Image (cartoon, rainbow, N blue to C red; front, side):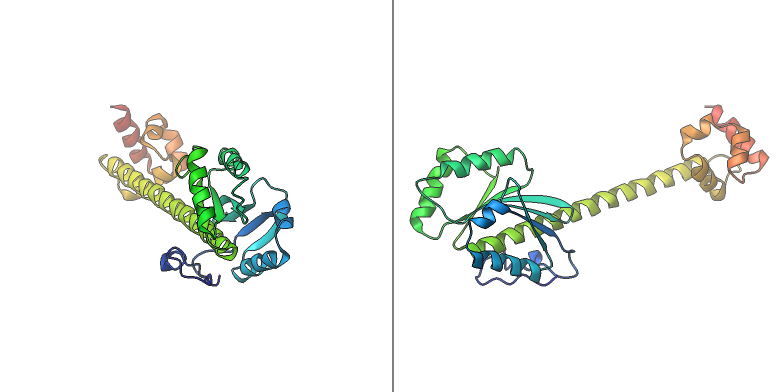
Length: 241
């Protein structure tokens, strides 16, 4: 996937750690609200389509509750995108944000606020409607193209973080599994006459010390290549405790 190209200098978008490259993440899917689409100028929709295509995102037009939902890296991220801030009609924006934050774990509200008056209006309204900090996160921008680039950056970053979280969890589970196997082999090979080969055979066939304690000599002989003497030794040893 090609690096995002931004027409302005933004510390988040210019952060090398957050750039999208072909080797870092696979393509995602962007779903756009059909009502929101019809309210925008066709040239802006063309910009969005071209930007997504250039970065290997697939665009679908869907009757969804938010303005956008990105499926990226196994994570769904929802966005409200206010392209025209009306200082006299802000209640609907905050009411919608409160409603959608209960439906989506990852929700962002991007606001196009090119003037000081609009920015001041947003700040006053934010506290007036008692919004919780970060629930959802509001992202003010100075133009709509910047806003959409920011949206894609956020969605991508969330997806990458999710993938890293999954990898970390899998690694921890794998390490735990290896540790459990090592403990199993250490306990079983402490039985006189039982070696690593016997312990591995028992692990594959039975898998736990508790299972060995319940297994009969006949079952051990049927499911492993242990000798009759070793099977007898194990049964007697385990049941003596």
